[in-house]
Length: 461
Image 1 (cartoon, rainbow, N blue to C red):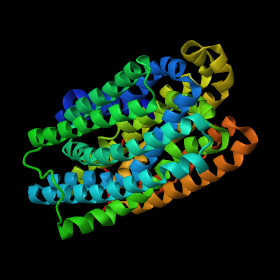
Image 2: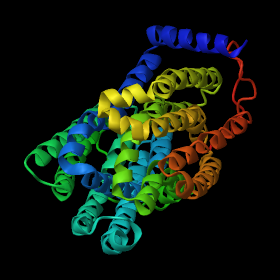
Image 3: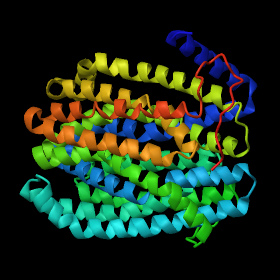
């Protein structure tokens, strides 16, 4: 069976399964809400970018993107145990052990609170030094940038706790309430930014509004956990066994977050350090346009992680092989459908969206970024499958290697080729991570879509 036949079978399988199986319909619903959650932020930013750049100017807009990237990068260090929360909460849910689920939740809140507080204090203290010595920022904007970063340190604590509640809902395959709250929060943040800018306010005011909205969203997520999951503890708690399990898996997913910083945030930080805030603005707009290629697929297929974890715990292994294989071919179809239009039409899309002058400066950058995110998007099925199988260590090391190579390439190429070099450096990350599919063959030796009888030879963790 060739690749096109496998893609066709995968699409037919998905449509038939969604009609006949309640579990499959639930997966489709969760996938749809996962996509909606992801797209809310980039789509809102795409719609607002032209107005915000016009009112703020390239330098201030770039400073906002730089502050957001810094907070996002620091936040990844305090939310790296999220995958461990999903895996163990869904695993014990599948085994019908609610007490163990509660221990996992309380332990994760404790870990995230300690990590986020430590990272937030470091960011607060280092903000003045970073602004004056690391980033190339106009003197008149430096004071505002310091304040924005310090407000961001509070935002990352709130988001760290919020992420625990979101991951608990995902572990119970309750994507809808988490997404509804997240989407409303992200929309409110963008609306607030537009309104504040229209009233003559700057980046610091936008960051303060973001903090208020994030706090309200965290409270609503906690309420949703109690309403949808039950009497789950919403305070930090020390449970030795639960913490040991979380650290055994989560320490690797935390390290993986470091590689995520490289692909999702560090390139903008390097651009800001080497080329200045105006270049960050150009680069950020192109990233916002291309990043949904990977984000759409990762959000849509995220349900595979808790779903495979729960089914693996209950020994429904014979049915997992065709699910993983068909998910891969759906993954491939989505990559082609999402990346090719942006690659082929980058210049006219930018002309329509941001104007001909902006497009002339950036269309090559957008083309390269679209290819890079498409290549990365091909690893989504393998990534979630290996995490569900407990292979966090392997996934982490592979992503760290890919991230390190990408970071070196970006650092080497930017001085020679500018923003084009930054975009070209990101082409390496995705293909390196494809190695994970060789690892999956250890558990799924036969990838033939027509063979539904192959069972996974996987020992439970």
